[in-house]
Length: 300
Ligand SMILES: NC(=O)C1=CN([C@@H]2O[C@H](COP(=O)(O)OP(=O)(O)OC[C@H]3O[C@@H](n4cnc5c(N)ncnc54)[C@H](OP(=O)(O)O)[C@@H]3O)[C@@H](O)[C@H]2O)C=CC1
Ligand SMILES: Nc1nc(=O)c2c([nH]1)NC[C@@H]1CN(c3ccc(C(=O)N[C@@H](CCC(=O)O)C(=O)O)cc3)C=[N+]21
Image (cartoon, rainbow, N blue to C red; front, top):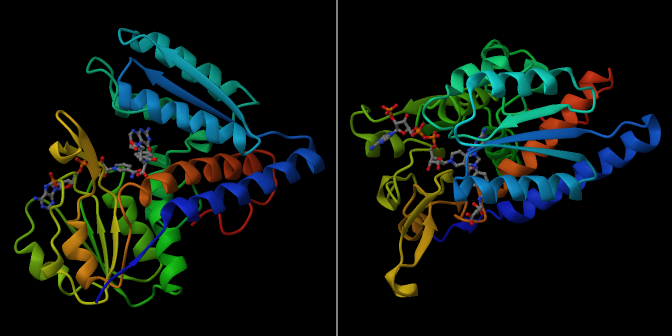
């Protein structure tokens, strides 16, 4: 069997277009423009690229983008003061602090200071609690993007055996919650899981969020399984020239594509969906802040 390639890049473009239409409607009907503030601490080159892309796509969707670049040695007090200002700013509906941050700052503390209603990353304990208890909050962007791709391919997910590999707060845990909410039978695996290959062989859905290049092999999969590869790993690519690198996922794409029914590529799979869902979450937050119904199909 040769898997269908799930085109996350094209799907994400569709989500962004839909967000753009809803933003235009908000502007016309209510005179409101959603705004997203992104905070970048330090000068990590990969983070700079992501933040730039987020800003460009935010503006493309018709929303306001506010970038706050802080020096790597910014104090916790200064960062907190900025978050307080953004919490109070009515033009700002979403706030994201790009991670990782330098070691002297605490990601937990940063997230705790963001107004939960503006927490478009869905990382605040209030949003985690709302998701875990089946209530409406902000859902983390990457799991939301994965869920959209799965629903699009499989329709109703109820009764499916789903395996999430990885238990991080950012990815594995919320992904498990979302799949449970859609009535999958969910297994969350991690570094202590015994015989991961045997667990994977039962799964109709495999979401890999491990951070280990090409770890999941084709012979671990149930034939026809749907595979969502969240991993973004840069590995040496001497075939492209000396010192060159390329991006690969957590799945060994070639062997997995022989067995899976469908699989997301890296790049061009989950990554673009993350940014599209960030825009969708900002729109959702803006609607809720203004007492308007959030557009359907753009949240979980
Ligand atoms: N496409 C996108 O938009 C995004 C991509 N990513 C990518 O997704 C990947 C995961 O990210 P994140 O969740 O933040 O990573 P973390 O490092 O926070 O979590 C990794 C998880 O994988 C588990 N793990 C590690 N090794 C193994 C193993 N050998 N077998 C089984 N499980 C293992 C760990 O288990 P334990 O808890 O036991 O240590 C941990 O729960 C990364 O490649 C990251 O770059 C992340 C966010 C967004
Ligand atoms: N507060 C916070 N929230 C995040 O959601 C967050 C973060 N910090 N820090 C870093 C991770 C990683 N992340 C990605 C987003 C887009 C792509 C993406 O667009 N990837 C492209 C390729 C990009 C490239 O070529 O480098 C793709 O997969 O096709 C990847 C990874 C969001 N993260």
